[in-house]
Amino acid sequence: MKHIWKAYGEGRPLPGYLMAMGSYAVLVGVVSAAGRLAGVQLPERFSLGDTALVSIATHKASRLLTKEAVTSPLRAPFTRYEEAAGHAELKESPRKDHPAQHAIGELVTCPFCAGVWIASGLTAGLVFAPRMTRLVATALTAVAASDTLNLVYDKLKS
Image 1 (cartoon, helix red, strand yellow):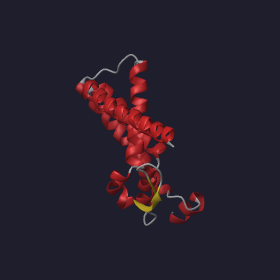
Image 2: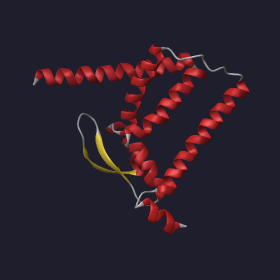
Image 3: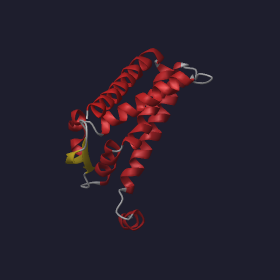
Image 4: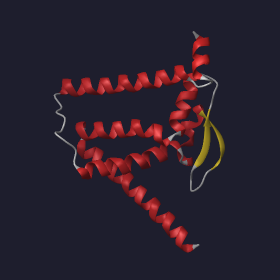
């Protein structure tokens, strides 16, 4: 079986990816079941404002989790430091010691990958705890706006 994964995966950690996809599916299933048991009703639709807020918050949270120097201790068991990569960001690569470690390393170094999980969490938060989720999403959005203004300011100075 290991030979099949190696042949078709071309060096990719396919068992780790299956574990990540399975974990995501189980988590979504548990949240859905908890919502059903609690009698939580899905909204008819989300407002454009909530969608924009969650979008910007997801962007900031995914960058914070996957690239920021301050969160590198969370990534360290799954990544190897390579170099600094811009304003308070790091370039890291996934460790390849074990397929699960490699897959998690890819998840925690890829803002696109982490964004799916973060957006799912924030969207579920809008259903289960909308006030708290909007508070957290507003703070993340404010940080994203602040980051943008700081980068613009630095660009204008030079």
